Image (cartoon, rainbow, N blue to C red; front, side, top):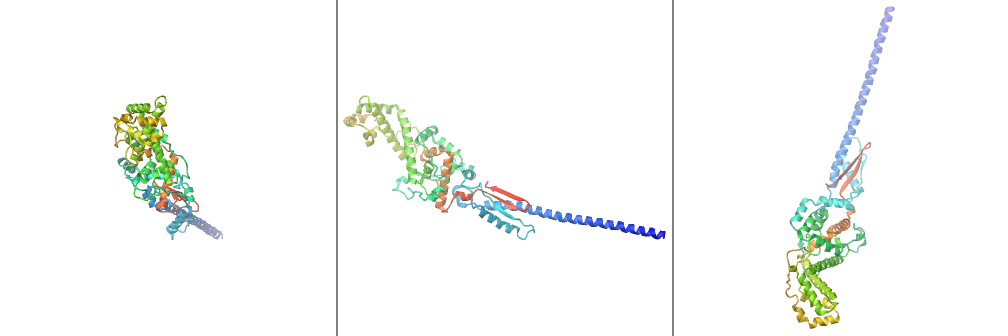
Length: 445
């Protein structure tokens, strides 16, 4: 019996050890299975996260690739049309296509937020210009004018002149919002004296950034045109300077400033020419003896400068050059033509007119030895005089008016409802993975 008891204990112990081993193996197996399941879940999550990253990069490029071709070809600006909902819908379609029949894990959604990338924001517009006008465009500008003389004043009027924007919606949606500000003739006079010659203004243009390059390459003025495309306004450079919705007003305003500036510069040149001053004094003493002769001297000088200025303005509109400060050899009008002009005689009193008539033979001989020329190669042309005004403008006002012209021309050429605020220079969107949000942001570079 004692032996049976020992055998029984031995058997029970063996079974107990075996049961414990089986329980332990079951625990290990379950733990291993759980690790496998967890590992699979983590791997699946990593795969989904990785796919989200890949999708996001590809989709960013896809959105940016839809840039407006006309905007790029006409103004070297890269931007695409859209809004948050439209871009979100495109991204959802991309998601449905990309994740179809792939993985059991479902990506919850994707949403776009384009705030801050509007082309109508001056900061973004300036960045887009800098991207579009590269060193090659700068080199092209320096090496050649690349503009065509228009010759408008030779015609009996032309179709585009005098266009006015009266549509209130169009005016209200212009980037400048009717912002005021205009360069005075005095500013043009002082800046012209500082610049002095063609080479200096050329260097100033080439170093003044993308805005100036766009003006030269893409926008017209009264004398020269940049290309053969349709432009709503004839006087686009003049619009930048004056900012009126009336094309004729912009033209007249710039012509007036040119006249006043050239007149001031001609007066400077006139008083620096001793021979001309002596002739003026002599004639003034003949037709207005006594103390009032000083006033007549001033009338003669101003009339002579104004007559010279009229010749200068005519030359500028014929795409000729006019020096900033003329030398005696560069003067074009004679003193006799001044004395014969109705404008000069209108400024004289009756007594002076009688003395002028009585002494006309004597007076006609005065100043005959003063040489005149018809035209010359030195000096600045119309484009360069206007560019002096444009360079002197407030940079923000200038940029906003450039934006106006881009929007106006895009409306006129392609889309009646074109608005810079509906075009974007970059994209931003979020892919909701469930546990983690993947944010993607990309812009043109």
